[in-house]
Amino acid sequence: MATNGKGGGKGGNPGGKGGKGGKGGAGKSLVRASLAIHEPPVGQSTTPGGLIKNFDFDFNPAQLTMSRRTDWKATPSPAVRDGAQPEFMGPEPRRLSLDVFLDSSDQPDSNEVLKKVEALFSCCEVTASSLAAKQPSTPWVVFQWGSFSTARFTAYVESVDVTYSLFGTTGVPIRATCQVSLHEIPSKTKGQNPTSGALTARRVHRLVAGDSLQSLAWREYGDATVWRVIAETNGIDDPSRLAPGTELILPAVEEVTA
Image (cartoon, rainbow, N blue to C red; front, side, top):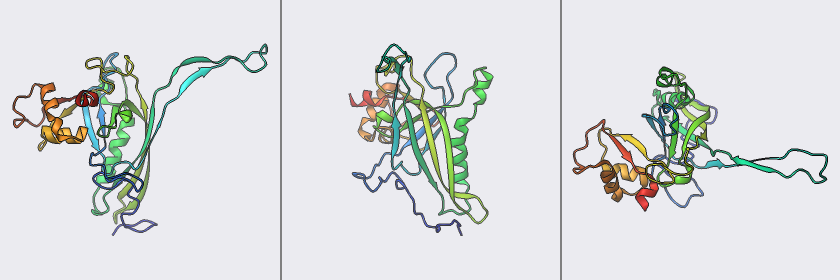
C-alpha cells in the first residue's frame, strides 16, 4: 500500500506515460524525451566526452521554460541628464528548466524512483575521470526531444530540486517530481558543429540489445525512414548486423532534414 497525503492514485502525471502530451497540447508526442549524460571533455574542447548514461524520461515534460538574455552595461555619469548610453557586452548562454516526473506506484516495493533521482543528482557531482585528468568537472549533458532543436544544446546541470510525494510501505519514495535547470556551455564556433555546419551537435549512441537503425531514427528524429542517414554516416552496409556496445554517430537534426 502506498502512502501520501493526497491519495495513492497516479494523479498528477504531467505528460503521460510513453510521451502523452498535456491537456492543452495538439496531440500525443510519440518521441520520448531524454537527457544524454556525458563525461566532460579533456583540454579546451567544447565537445562532450563519452556517454555515461542516457536518462530516458518516463513521462515527457508537460512544459519547458527557456530563457536567453543579453548583457548591457551603462556607467553612470553626472554629466548626462537621462542616463549614460549603454554598451553591449555580449549575449548570455541559454537556460532551460523542466520538471521530470517519476512514478513507480504500480510497484510499491521498487526503488526505481530513488535510482533515477540519484542519476540526476550525479549530474551535480565531479566525475572520477575528470579528477584523474586534473580537470575536475561535473558531467556535460544534452537534452533531446525528437526534432525540438531549439532546446537541444550542450549544457551543465545547474540544479536539481526534488519533491517526493508518494512512498511505499517501507518508506522508499515511489513518486517524485524533479525540477532540473540546465545552463548552456557555448561552443567556440557559435551555432555550428565544426564537422558538419549544423546548428545542433552530433552525438554518440552506444548500441544496446534490441536497438535497430529504424528504432534509433524514430527515437531521435521521430521518423524511422531516415535510418539510411545514420547508416551512411557510420559506413554501415548491413544494418541487420549491429553488435551491442558499438558506438554510432547520430547526425544533427539539420543533416537529417536537409
